[in-house]
Every structure is written in C-alpha cells, then in structure tokens.
Image (cartoon, rainbow, N blue to C red; front, side, top):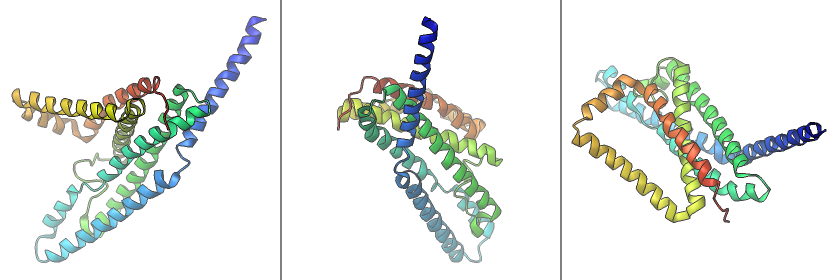
Length: 258
C-alpha cells in the first residue's frame, strides 16, 4: 500500500521538476533577437567589413606577390567578437531571469539545470553556424580574396567536425564563465564582482610571475604548439566545469533582488 501511494507521487514530482526545467530553458529564448539575430547580424557586418578591407589591401598592393599578401589574411581575430558577446549573454541571462523564475516557484536547482541546457543549445547553434561559414569560406577561397575569418590559421583544427568541437568548447567556456560571474553578482552584487575580478587578476598575474621566475615560457609555448587549438580548448573544459559547479552552489544561497 505504501509503495503504491508513494511511487505516483514521486513520479508527479519528477514530472513537475522536468516541466520547470523546460520552462526555464524556454525563458532564456523569449528574446530571440538579442540571443540569436543581433549577434548574427553584427557578425555578418564584421564579415562584410573584413572583406572590404581585404579587397582594399589587395588593390593597394597590386604588383606584389598575391600569395604573400593573402597569407596575412589568415590571422584575423574578428570571429572572437562572438565569444565575448556570448559571455555577456550569459551574464544577462542569469542576472535578469533568476528573480523572475524564482518568483514563479522554480527551485534554484531547476533554474540552473534549465539555464545550462539553454547555454548548451546556444553553443551548439552558434558552433554549427560558424562551422558552416568556415566551410563556405573554404569553398569560395576566402570570400574570393583568400581571407580567413572563421577558420584562421591559429584555430584551424583540420576537418570541419573538429572545428565544430573547437567552437563548441570555446562557446561553453565563455557561457559558463559568464554565468558564474553573474551568479556572483546576484548573490553579492558589486562587492562580489570587485572581489571576483580581483581574484581573477591575481590568478593571472600569479601565473605570469610563476612562469617568468621559473623561466618556463619556452615550455609553455611548446605546450601550446604541441597541444594545438583543439587540445587547449579541451583543457578549457576544466574551467567550464568549475564555473558550472561554482555558479550553482553560489546561486543556492542567493537572494533574488529586483
């Protein structure tokens, strides 16, 4: 008798929890313009601007070896914009929707799971977009001018599926790092943010000092070269995982404030 009464209740509880997780995930996609269309439009504008600049450089260097000129086009860092934008998206997604979601009875656990699913979907969508654009870039010989915006030499991971994984890992890193920063802000406000970025700065400066004092810059450079872009991105999963776990535990004790 007891087992028969408890099981349906537990099933209903799990079903309600799943519905709330899905609801939180959908909540992050209410403003699709800011999440998808605006960054895509800006990315398209940056691409057109790069193509125009590449054409002007080729026109200004007429008579010079074209291959040498185009070689310089393979080091563009313009695509990095989209990763910074996703960090901002994550910060806004957590800080703006957390009070709203809790006001409708969503638990902090369900909120974080739903947000994590949303971040994963965003990462997959934009990774697919950048991968397709990199393939078009290759098929058109760099948009007709030998330019490389979506597959620059320093992140070109070879086959398209490896490039997709590279983009995916990078997006996840920025999204979850941004969500952890937002969790700090939600709980401790400006004081927490100052302490958070001060800690990040100390870690970076400390790492630079340690490498410098131990004369390890050559070893660090060798590690980057031997690991390759994909290997370095794989190691970023450590920071991504720590950010995801830390963000959850910080929000567990956060009080929503409007």
